[in-house]
View 1 (cartoon, one colour):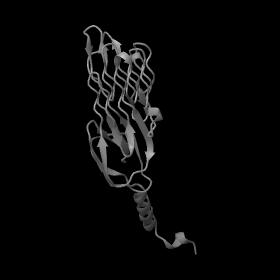
View 2 (spheres, one colour):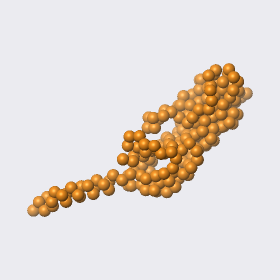
View 3 (cartoon, helix red, strand yellow):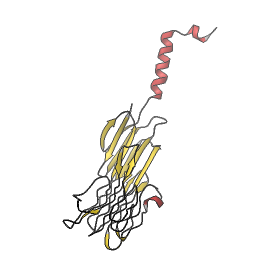
View 4 (cartoon, helix red, strand yellow):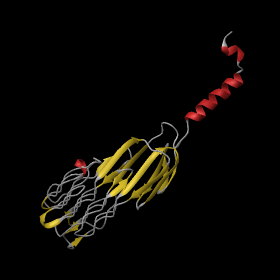
Length: 236
């Protein structure tokens, strides 16, 4: 006798709902500033803290972008951007994960590293008006550009060399006074790690690991921006 003839329609509907419910569990976590967009929940850390995961149903993963602090400027030399590490579809277990957000370097100081889940984004190199820009996640500007260390690090990621005066960016190398571009993430719909410019319009400290600018009109140098961590996962 066919199985369908021995099971009522209501029982079949209940069985289907049970199976669907067990497959549709989502990660539960706290930490940072929590927002939602579409089907994703985002945890943004602009200072050090803890990403605490209460539960992870089978098959669920996270995406994250980790950015270091940008390097500070020097006279006529922009700072290099903080290095950027972006990783998608990463497995994670329930537990507490320490988050270290690197602060931006003061004028004439390199940026600080950011750390999460075994990965390190390297602080941007400081600008150096009297010599070669300092190396870092992205290299600082100088009489010649500093070296970018992020792409060759154990964590991989993004960073480019500084130029003659302009700081390297996480999305491209500097060219003369003009800083390297930021890295634009299609996953997180934002830009991270712009290099520090040398120009007449620099107006202050940026965000997302930007290297420090230098304003020729006022003779003012700026610190690099603090880094950031953004974690996202499906929540519905």
